[in-house]
Length: 146
Ligand code: RB5
Image (cartoon, rainbow, N blue to C red; front, side, top):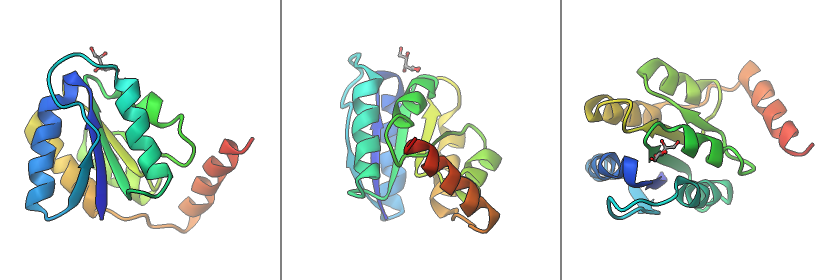
């Protein structure tokens, strides 16, 4: 699995920690920035990560900003992206099992690094269970074509 990762300045430190985890897990990733603590607009990076997932270039995306809200709103504007803002393990697992979320979003100003890294690990290991949930995800996709 190859991952697209990105953050704004408010998520930069956590992004760097997540990259260490991905390396430990032997997972490939592409870092779409930002590359420092200098202020940037989350919209630019969120869109790039979301587009790389929507196009199939990369399988899943991880986005971090201060709250996670701006990145979530941005990523979900891109057709084919189901971005889930998760700050707990239950939601992150269900975002995969029920919603087939292909982008995980977190807010570095909301949670600690330890929990965030566990969330990433759990999210990457969790799979979509299909069944009745496939029908609902299909209805989300249908909305994109309206
Ligand atoms: C940046 O100050 C902050 O607004 C951004 O990281 C994010 O929280 C927006 O939703």
